[in-house]
Image 1 (cartoon, rainbow, N blue to C red):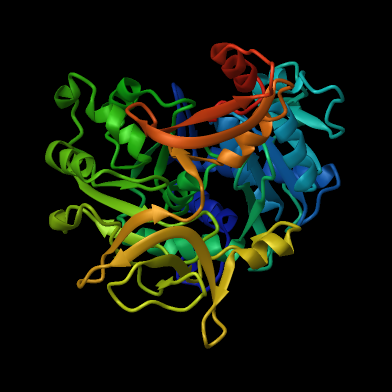
Image 2: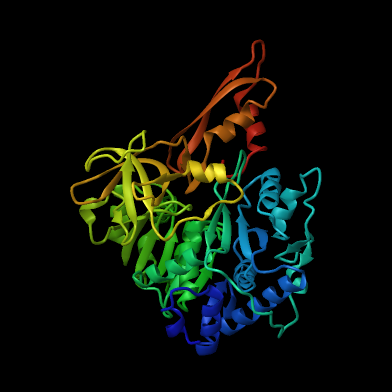
Length: 484
């Protein structure tokens, strides 16, 4: 079926769209990493080889694989190829500890595990290796090399039936320490996101620069629509502000999704203004508070529109600020998207009057199925209105102004957002109190020029104990994820 017919259906899959692009624009470039390029024809063929290899290894539609590594062509091909087999992908944060990675692999019921060299080295710290067949995406010595694991060139998988509510991916809400929860997002949710992408200008002439990790929902909401609509994705394995500007100018990039701390670092590049960014049409942001002054600087010096999204990986209601259209509303996160119902409730679960402060809850078609195997956590995240419609609690406190724009006031949840990633103080406190000399610990977030926020610990030692702060900090940092 042709792309134009596919994209108008109520439900379809990314894999079908890739097949259509391969047939209609086979030589168009889908993926770029450094000097390597994959056309849509090449990508489609390699997706077939991934899907066929998964089926060869006994995986069926509805099964799960886990992947942990930096952005790469192999990672992208694996992710898309798994979807062709109807296999859900659980992308894990390589900044997590070995213990946390092992726990998430077990929790998501993965049948195969894909890693790169850095993740493989981290996993060597485990006293007992992960008991799963492991494939090395980069051909390193930490599993079967990806290129030899693939089915032979020309292989075609058996057609895989995919139900709309079937799991597309399982993204973990806290991939560090503590109790990470697997957020299940369905094929139908991802399909619906493609329709919103049309309003952002996604199409076959789009070039999106991806500098955030593929394990993040922040990345997937730009990565998938770009390829789904036949555009090109330029992959960065690790963000660097100057490198970002160089790639953006070289590839005539039109779109990018960045977290606020990345905008801060890019705008601080001394010779920012010498880079040709004139091809940009739209810049996107999400995942963390975006200072009004920084938004204003981006609007002034960086061509193209700027849109900030406020929402959760769990889904529910999303607000959007079209900053280039509403420069007088830069202190807000915008208005709810069409068909997104965002409300404010008090501590008793009652809706507050307009203009009053309350916890933000949201409902839309883009909502998680639930936390994987955690009905208790799912129920705690839900709120239902008088008609029984299901909303997701955000834990954020906000207020709508007279024009319907939402301003965030505070966070009900005791959470720190550092570099666009969520850090839970209770995780760090639990680790600190595991030290034999520590009696009590409290962790708070403080403003950070480099990260937006950073955690600081206040520690009480056990009576009669002595411990140097730097020694304790080094001990803790060796036990927790890098983002913490």
